Image (cartoon, rainbow, N blue to C red; front, side, top):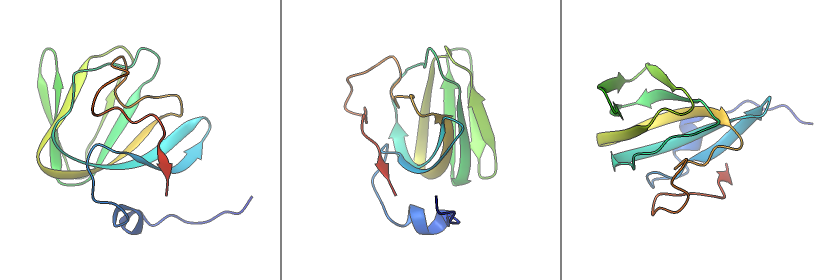
Length: 122
């Protein structure tokens, strides 16, 4: 197995589309993903997986059923399994995600225009 460093900026420059995470690494059953998004996602939850969202550039709002949390550059938020959430961003945000390899981006909504079942490794 070859060990290489990953340059986050280089990887982010490889794509421009929104709501389509790319895998950049894997460790202990967890995947490290990069994504860009703008606009609103769908309300969803993950019954078996926690998710970590780390903002690399920009900011977004994580809507929960009882409150909305602003997540800015350098901030991260962990969404525990079973918690309904909906990310949204007025302007493009670049994020890094840490989540189990089994995580479907739309969670309990398996068929949505935002659902990505086969993520690309970059």
